[in-house]
Image (cartoon, rainbow, N blue to C red; front, side, top):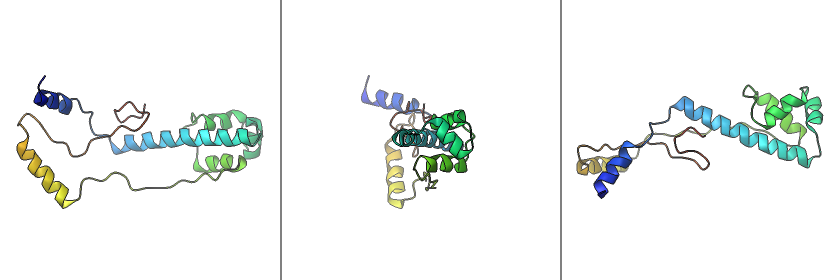
Length: 142
């Protein structure tokens, strides 16, 4: 296979751009898993059982366990903060700017010049999902 054929195969095989709502779901799911692991680690370090945590938070031990395992998808920020506080953690929610399109004029000009050199069968995508560590590379987080 020539270098150009390899480029065509690579360009065609790229997954579609991730929708904003899917990105939000993926990030939230990851954050719930991470927070659950941190809560479990802190609970064990504090010598508390799930029953102790549930009782202190006014919920069942099984619900506290579902929060730790990130299987309670309807968990509220208040529930996370309460469980965290019982095991000695401050659970915080923060918002960060999301991905933005290319805005640098010099970079846009460079991409425009690059397009001139591409064969007509190739296309140039300026925004593509980049797989995160531990993902399948298709932007789904699984």
